[in-house]
Length: 310
Length: 182
Image 1 (cartoon, rainbow over the protein chains, first blue to last red):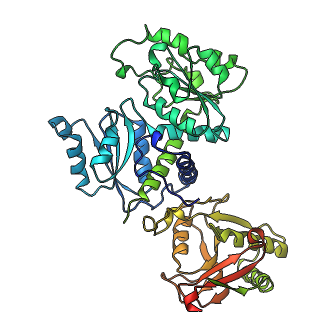
Image 2: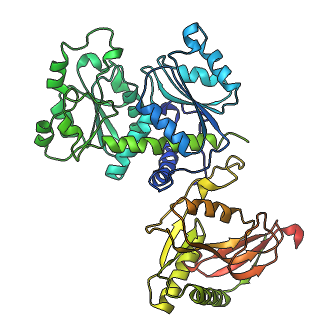
Image 3: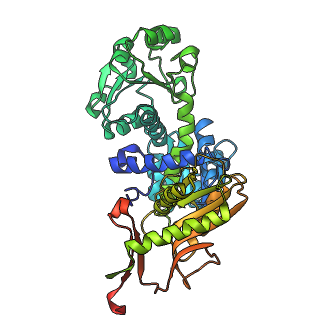
């Protein structure tokens, strides 16, 4: 296998083919071994500079990218929108071109506007990695989720995965649907009718509004966070009512006739979408997801960087 | 390219035997030693040495595989990307006498990367280098092997391939010469 990714930027899972996904996972296997060594660092990207531009808040993703970059020996500059010239009215292209003028090779960007990464990739001369663009895609999260399923269950092909929660506003859900479908998994979405987009079944996913039925069907349940910050109107009466219908607790988990894998992209609202007991149980892979996030991001950065000519 | 066999099966086995005895001379009972093959092709030699040494000494020889992909100096300088193989070191190399093993020693760049990769796992007491074939006078980096099966003089345009019973069906070393030099 001596092929590289079919894309020059990671803008969304939609642009990747199955072979790309397999190359990323295989490379991530090696990086997972690297980050468990006494010296968790390799010199591959010594001569690469990466800018992390976070126009929207993030803790986990930003840390994960930064660690991944540093473990590849890249030089890293960080930028967050608060306290920057963005506030003074500078456009996105100007901001990024100013940063690139300082000889930056790759840009990792999170932005609240869907399509921001695609837009940037057309107008600036650098490799772009989308770290979340509004309600559109969050490709590295989907990759690490699929990688964690592959790690726990041996493969993704043929597995049944249910994504529970706010599908309407979730970039994690959309990227996950693309990724899991490309890898041959069956996907179901589950949540209140108001939070399930109307034509979602056209993406080849099943729709279910009863959590218990959904869990009985699945091998893996990916419990999304209710994103109160993205909701301009009320989509359900109260948080408590949401929890009663779509929250996962130990009683429900135990009532199933099989052991399912529980995932959560974080940050968890304990007691809302899942209880603490479930989050900390042996069926949960939440912390594995975080560890795998660094390995998967190292793989993506490594593969894209290998396309930059010296 | 016209292939010429430069080491046949009989000589191959003599070389392996000789290398094993040279190793025993320096490493005694191998209690503090480990053989580490460089991925991808060095692991076959490492396994063969382990097998033969265990037959001769009756001791268990610690053997591992080291992938050097992320330590190479030609990242972004090749058309095809460098995709990694597996590293398999299930023992500590701290204070061990490590024998790095590769099938062909050529420019020395792989071994240089191997040394960097090795040190990420700890601090060996001593590191030695063993190569089945040494394409001498072709080094680009000042690295020499401590144990050599056979020295061969080659042109840069030529190719040396070590074939194994396990993978290619027969133990032998082949030299490929491009047409214009025949």
